[in-house]
Length: 54
Image 1 (spheres, rainbow, N blue to C red):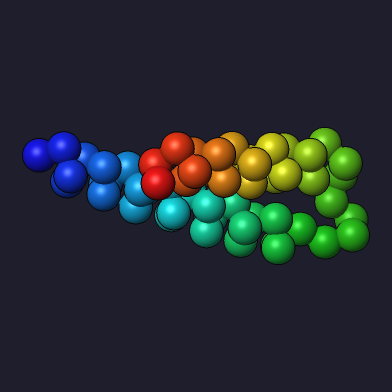
Image 2 (tube, one colour; image 1 turned 120 degrees about the horizontal axis):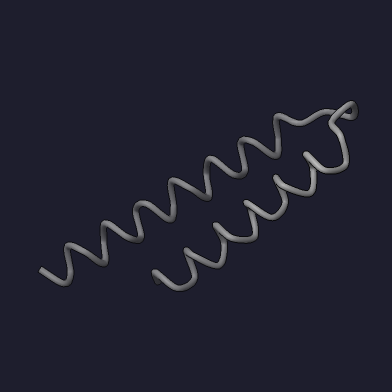
């Protein structure tokens, strides 16, 4: 059971990281600084979550 939970947590972290990267890549030069900052924070949080799930 623990292995399934760990795999599910890692899968969720990988999906969130992919979504955060996609969001960041979708921003263009007209994005507000606060929008860029939120996207970067989301990316950092997703990377941290994936590191913890590893």
